Length: 162
View 1 (cartoon, rainbow, N blue to C red):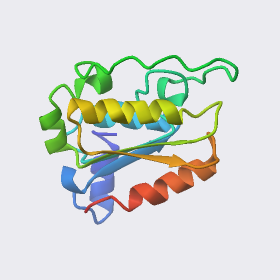
View 2 (view 1 turned 45 degrees about the vertical axis):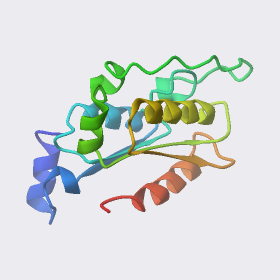
View 3 (view 1 turned 60 degrees about the horizontal axis):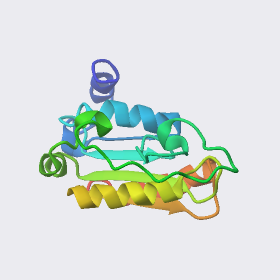
View 4 (view 1 turned 90 degrees about the vertical axis):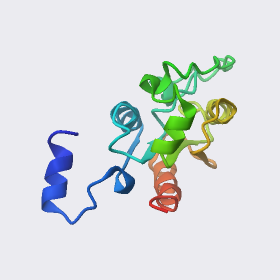
């Protein structure tokens, strides 16, 4: 991604090849890949979109890489450890806020594969920790499906590059 794909895109397309003009987003497992790539390369990305994946919600849902059983109640999420979550990218909230313009996270509202409640708690913990540039979107009445991701992309696109 960093050494091959991004330079190729910048060579073959008319881009503004700097972090202030670069976004990455992914859905489901791609959200996890997006988090893995962008959080250790904040010098290259200012806009990050995690659609039904990649959000460290602390329990259930795709945010941790697997679905909670349909009948099991969701446990209370663990407090975020900013020194370790997202590869430590948020260890200094002020620095993270300076580097990242938008951290966008979304889920559908319907179980069993989505974790809307976990995402809400995650957002509350980020705000309490001083992360002020994160946004969430909950797609009403959808689960881990294309309709969720279409709505997520539509909403994410409206906050890009402003």
